Length: 269
Image (spheres, rainbow, N blue to C red):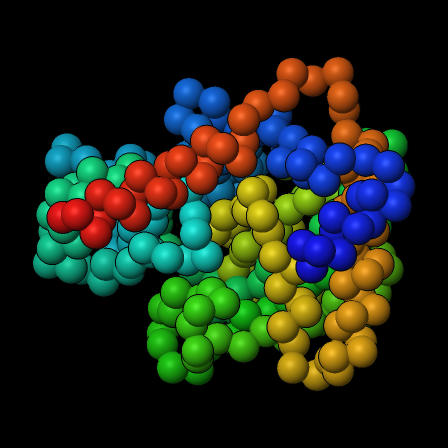
């Protein structure tokens, strides 16, 4: 996908490195990350889960809660505390590492969905790519779903919804912000509830959000390749059409520096 993106950018005469400027308005330059704490503040109150900085002074008022790094790495380092004993044990270990962590209240919905979008320009009336994918896990009651969890499977349910339902879901997403590329993770009771606005947002990925619907096992390699080519060309067009009047931020270098620093400190300890 990376090679295809670079070739697509060259074809339409835009610089591939500018990909990292697509979501730069939401990049916290002081912290050098797309902060989950900042992004959570963008969510309308009815969809937002309580989230706090993990420190010695904070104590949850109910369980379970999720402990997660302030910036994500495909669910790496995410833990669930089912009770006070779990929480205290995890907190002691995490605070010792020195990595910034957050505590998030658990969502009540039984099913987890990923909503992926790519918009080619700020003036677009419809996204170039739009998918709704369910993450299923039959092994754990409160799973940490991700591409490295062998018990997680992904199922593209976009076609389950009619055009009216899809439009209402897109309106809900746009009420948070028009992100050139994003993957929004939510929990609710049923896929149809997404159109009704009955869901809770776990988080939104703005750095390098993988189009998770491509992992649906129903698709053949040929179908995946066709979707990848269309998606990647749309992403290259979005890169060309980015707002060039905005001051650029060192998104890639700062994110990479933080990841290397964390991994080095973890291995050293």
